[in-house]
Image (cartoon, rainbow, N blue to C red):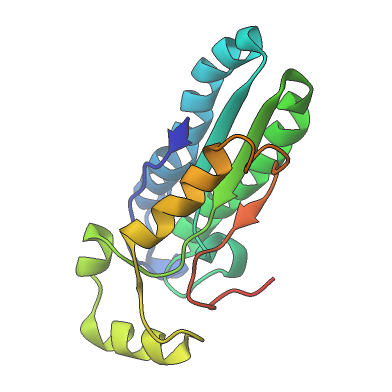
Length: 163
């Protein structure tokens, strides 16, 4: 199962409405919980499964005007680690992918000046492409490649986060 729902908005915390906060948490975190909750019983019955959650590097490092987004994605990372511990005895793995800036529809709405500045900060000074992230999910879902990965956060992020 791949959880990949996500939205992004920007707001300084002092200007952020409760509705903006709640929507971000609902789409980016609650959806992961609900999908997982309804899928896990089937995985437990078959004594195997792969859960792959798409988080974000901002869940690891935070971001200006992104407190709500970063909190939701950090929640996805912590949720994934917790379910990895809960579900491992059933043969189920749970992992995250925390991409950095990737050329997606969300990125198309971002200010050009911010994009130029961000690229200059990256060890690999370019944004990734979706097709460069997909192999990470395939790896985590593969047998035997992903068999002993659980509770991990892999970061295709052009070197923006190095843990």
